[in-house]
Image (cartoon, rainbow, N blue to C red; front, side):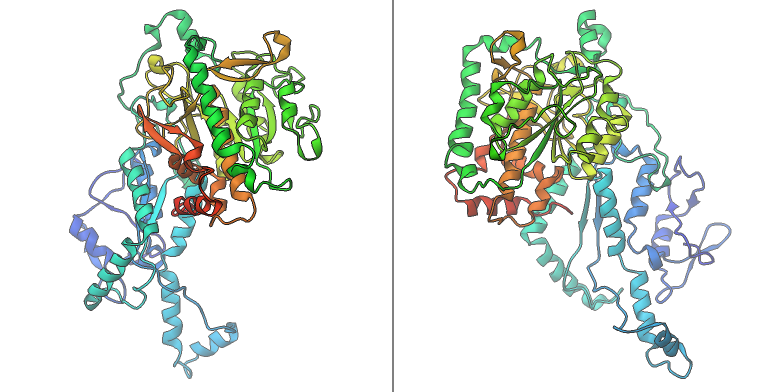
Length: 592
């Protein structure tokens, strides 16, 4: 900062920033020397032809992480920032004044006749002004709400008494740092950080409009400008007109061109085997989910944004609420609501009924909430408004229904700002969101549909057969995001009876896999809340980061996708204590 104006820090650059053309030209050594010019150790340094004096910005800006983030956004598009890594210099005890010290006693200490404790007071004020943890806490909160992957590494003990520039303390510093790095929680956090750093922020197959911005334009007062990029994309003009129209529609992924997979009789058998194994090892009578289950356990609330529901379908009578009441008590705002203008949540498509029954097939104790946003297989220009504008589906789900999980089996070819903002609000409140990847495979240039492509806030779900082999209609696995997949081929579930096609139908698609994934998440949350509650920091499960690491634990890699098998974690052969310990271990480093 300027020696003559210590209110704000100054950024010394060896390059010109297009967002701040007033570059302070200097050499790297001069910039480094300016950062050491603290008032108590080194004199100010004069830089530039005018000989302007600079001192360290340590008073008030000892932790430059927020300044670094601000500069990164000014230089690059925010979507190009994979994560922010902050490295501290050791945690020191918080600065505190003596208990009971008031303004009168402070004035007494400053009286010229009583200066014996003045150095103590000045030292306390100096420590408060140079404390780095306040910035860390502020940035940590901002990162959670903005969707920024933020990591902080800081030695917690052993460096409290080492003064700045104390050469004799190097050995103590080395020992304390080695001890910190050898801790299991640090190693896990380092591995997670490395995963984010090496993954990169943007899938090269996405266009600029598809790249989600995780920072509202008004945050920090930083304007976020678009950066033009050259990418190899598949142009829709190369497809037949019928296919182009289908891809560009506001689409509920309804499996209309995918049912050919069910012609293979093995596909149906494999899907049934997946559910049979789930029941035999996880959800069946006296299995792991049933061993501690009580009627008054905390219920996991799941919202399904789809085409409504046939609430009178006998499939749902298998899963009564406590006391035997129907899970769907009419069509009031308390659990079902229509946003399409059709005046009823009755399912005219079938997809919503199929999806709702799948959630309960996986997690029979989940509490469902139905948001009807489609009244036909294809949406229209108003569909995004049904999803997010004002107090529409997503906001109603989080503010009125207070759901824990949202399942979205639809996708749009382009980002919608209203949906993006609503998703950000839901994420900030800890709601876990699942979205279908897409059903058009490489035809869309490998692209994941929106909102499944909102990296860091929405769990994207692709499809497999019952044995874990990838479905031919999946988009290509992304390099900058998780690639979780769940059985989604030839899956049998409830179908509205007014179609006269029978009470159940087999369907395929990433939109079929998505409610199954939501059901698996509901199982994990239900298990965590069963008593006795032995999972340390179980509250971290109730948001994206926690569920993401648990899904990774349940997954096995195949064909570039991570195939979810719930029994890899919630296995009846394990004792509840062992399962809880494994979940606790996986949650180390979550919530940073």
